[in-house]
Amino acid sequence: MTTKMFTLVEGFEGESMAIEVAGDFEKSAAFSNTGMKSITTSKVPRRPAFTIKFNVPYETKMSFIYMVHSSHNYEYHYCHVNNQRKIVGTNGRAWTKYEQVLPAGEHMLKFEFNYQEYYKPGNNVDGIYLDNFTLEMFPLTNPSLIFTDEGGYPYHDAQGNIFKNLDFGTLVAGQTSLPQKVNVYNYSSFDVVKPMVYLKPPEFSPKVKLEISQYSTPFIPENELHFNGTMKDGGHHSFYVRAVSQEDTMSGGNFYIYAKAAPL
Image 1 (cartoon, rainbow, N blue to C red):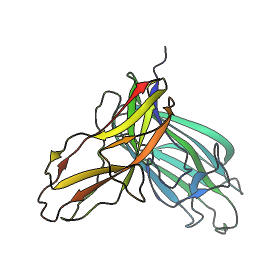
Image 2: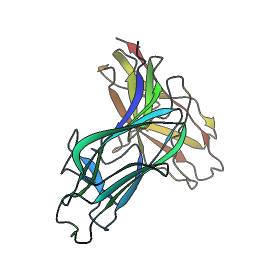
Image 3: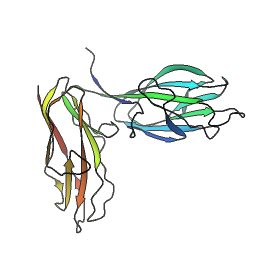
Image 4: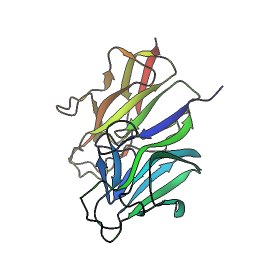
């Protein structure tokens, strides 16, 4: 029996992303493998390049779908994984899948596209197109409700091991942070009812308060959030979290948010 995995899929459809993308890139509706969008190298400069950075807590299988559109058939494209060249070529308009197993830790991919001298930026859709960036991150051995950030990157695994925190940065005393969106996914392999999210009694100064709300605007703070209806296997709900400090706050601390539900 195949073990079900928590699989992060970044399809580049929304505004937020689960991975860090930087450099000469843009989202494009010109070509996509699935959905409506992909990301591609910018049309300027002549040798655009962008990077993808991410961290995985365990050995992880990474994959992505890529395509190269080249008007002259000899613009070069490259992909480096952790500074090792893995893909090189001159053309290839068919979507192609690349896979690699990565060890736990931080990783970086770099995509480059070299235009010819006579290329005029902006007059076509030449470039590398990337879609469905996928990380098979950890096994879902227990029925679980998993918290993720807005982009879909998980905060913990099915055993409750935490490998990412909800970070509000540095707050000045008396300041209230901006609300951060959090998702809670049902990975129980069955539908559940009465899903709820709640705060554990704080393990920090009473002068620092955590608040949760089903809405960002208006933000209506509650100690417990109850969601109506059935939560399908693989389905999710979203809510918002903010930190509030008093003017005489001298220190912060850690807090915990929990979720629970009943089998259907």
